[in-house]
Length: 241
Length: 258
Ligand SMILES: Nc1ncnc2c1ncn2[C@@H]1O[C@H](COP(=O)(O)OP(=O)(O)OP(=O)(O)O)[C@@H](O)[C@H]1O
Ligand SMILES: [Mg+2]
Image 1: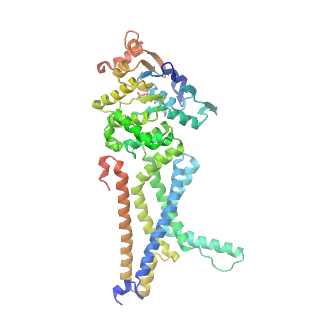
Image 2: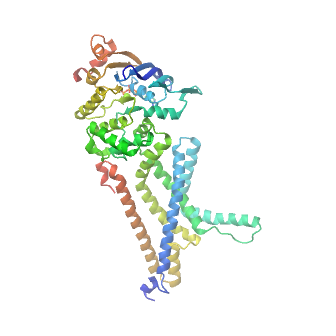
Image 3: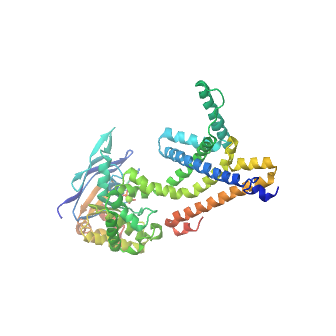
């Protein structure tokens, strides 16, 4: 079969499936990033709280989820979670295997990992805020909430953008591991296409190209956001990407 | 309104651990008073100023701003403000100018100046912008209103910081060495703004090493030494024959700068 036909949108083409898979990868990565943003914020706040117990728990989180292989976390959550659900099902009188939805389980697992990296990004960003600016906010009569909203958050975001760009790339690549749950994202679909057509080279290269398209496109978005945020930086910092 | 007491501080004490930095300091500022606070490094000037707007919590003593006392309670032997809400309110009535400017770096100069009036005082934005532009005009940086702090000189940043404090229409302005971080050639432009402010009748408490300001602009000089007020009085007396030996020795170090 001709290469073009294999990749096309016709009856024997994989084009439509690959397109859907690319969107699926984008969706699961974005969901994971959001889950990670929530977890990362909570963990960074805990680590900055000064409370010994919270700091300890935060450290355990970032150490464990940055230190353990991603694949293991995914197995743990997807298969571990599924067998827990199955056990509960049996206890309720339902015979047979109950699987967790692979999108949700995958996004959660990758989100937990992404959160451990994001926590460090947010913590570093908070520490980069000049202490005098926080003091000036208090001195003008801002309460804690207002100070958080007007002075802390905008600056945390500004300082976090480059780090978040890296975390996004990392999360995008991690999302390929979700293929083990059977979710038809880009990795899984490339695999299936390669296997069923025996055109391994073709489909893995096309898959790789699609990943590259995603990363370089998002890279550009992050760079643009960074440039916008850097408008307020000293001139010397403006040229850096 | 001369004769109205804008700020009254009674017997303020402050310790860091077992190091007592302020050992009972009292001070009254009437409307329009410009008080220069002098003292050697480490004598507690900054700590005193920071206790007034509760950036530090005094261990003991009373503070009244425009007649309103800041309510304090003892909790586990620690002095604490009774109401954070009152603290925020009092702070909004005290303008603070820092040595290192501390403008919010993610906001333009104009945004810095309207931030307090709009978000703390919740006043209409259009009104605040009009007032802010007038203030920036007054301190001479109207043309910089859409610039970010990092793109301004130190002298310009400090003038913006003064405008930011003034936009709150404070009862008293507190300055902590406002010119100490500036290159010598930029000191003058900030002192000129402060002098104009004094002439407008603003009540000011100024920690400074600028002897010319203490002598020629302020109407009272307070000399702090080792956590107490060593001596105070009108500049002519303090810098004349009435000086205490310690103050005489202190200003001896500044001989060339007058
Ligand atoms: N947060 C703090 N913790 C512990 N000690 C402090 C703290 N802040 C100030 N001190 C100590 O209190 C003393 C007075 O400090 P302060 O900054 O008030 O002096 P200052 O008169 O403003 O000096 P300078 O002219 O150098 O600014 C110093 O010995 C300082 O080390
Ligand atoms: Mg000081």
